[in-house]
Length: 139
Image 1 (cartoon, rainbow, N blue to C red):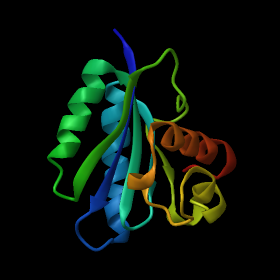
Image 2: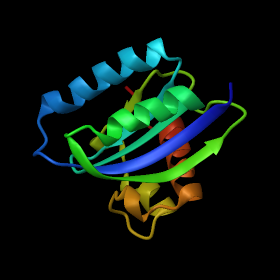
Image 3: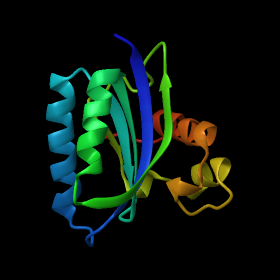
């Protein structure tokens, strides 16, 4: 089965509550472990940026569920491609918090230092995720 990487952005609908992200991470980690999916989630209380890696079937199914999730809106697929290896193998779903999304890293890959994943292209969003993986604490 082919290995794919999907990266999307979305906007939270409700005001952020601390339990929101914990619920998302718990559910994602359990579901992803069962389906051999790995990835990384970034969240700054307004925008989600998420990468999913796994079989085409599993990733597509999860993305379909995400599209129906009422906690966010304006899902935009930023990248979807066949890959030969995973970049986020160590996590069923790693998490980069708002405090770890630095202005410097954001500015390196975007026209602004404000984190807005909708402003990133396919190459820059992937490089930002790799930089976050390599340079900030991932939970």
